Length: 472
Image (tube, rainbow, N blue to C red; front, side):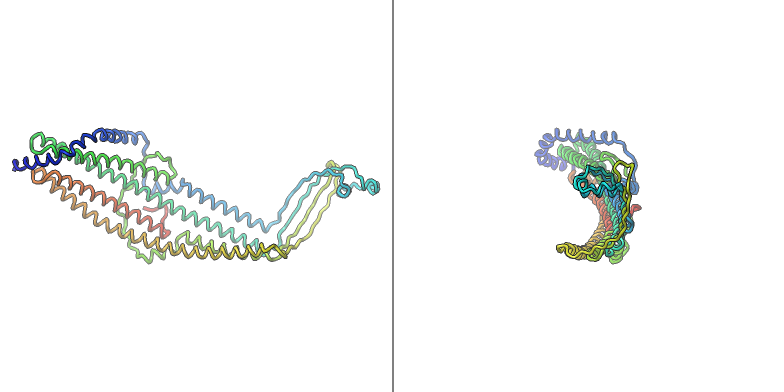
């Protein structure tokens, strides 16, 4: 048997000679990759690492993500809009201080009259026609109180309250989206780490095989091609290892961005990549939940109310507007002698013709109302599609987990059998390497299935509007 093995080995050595040169040509490239490989752990060690669970990542994002901060500011702005709307019911009080210097006959006489310093000489025609320059300081307090504005003030207050509710719903949906982004980024980082673990495990196994093959080659039990093929296999795994480390760095950067953390922060991820609970609720229940629970769907209903109110407000501009007015003023030339007076009254204003401006505003509001109605219908259809898609993807990912677990068990059993046969000289190195690659592929697929199911669950909860910061 050994003689036949040596003969077949000689043939294999001849067939392997074409890639021996390639291996030599790639050594400088491999050395460069190894330098990067050895530098990467030192770079990670230099960065401060801290344990981080998925729940902690989500809560950090809830506190620090800029999108949530912007949405919170939107709620605060809406609260101030309510205060502005309430002020429409209250009197508006203003104080003005005006200085004037004039020789205008009418204004000069009127100013002296307001200052209450008129004398008999002021009625002299020559003085009336050619008055001396006069200074005047006018201190006035004016009050304007809306009484009726065609219902526009009441509508404006209702809109301000609805707008606050809409901003709160927008904040709720933003929190859900940020939670989904953070949980997905965390899961992506976990997947990148598990891929690296699989590659490192395969690399350790391949290095052990290389040691064994080199020993057997020195004993004349295998040919040089087996050593070279194993070295090429190790080089391929080292390239994949470097690539996997790069994927981890990218995934960490994305995770930091969603959490509002510095991009270079490194974390020790403590949540494991597991199956989690299965999706037992029927699809129809998920769709019903989404239609009733999605914050953006409820927000769109409020937007429709706001658009309808805009129509009423535009029509109210055609109605009379009634204001009460009051004014108290003090006029003085030098703040020593002064005259004061007051005025109270009411004003009604009705627009007779606006160049079709008011009518166009009404038509614009009606068109916007129709637009919002169409957008609400489109959103409802989109939510159903999103929920259905997320549900089906979650189901598919769950089934793939079961298949991948079986494949891992089968691949590991096959690898054990092939390894035993190779060590006993019954199989070639190619069979062993194929079995190792199959085992690595099956393990990677299992992690991918776990990753895809976790992400699909996140997307399903997000589609249904049921995702919160306590997601696990």
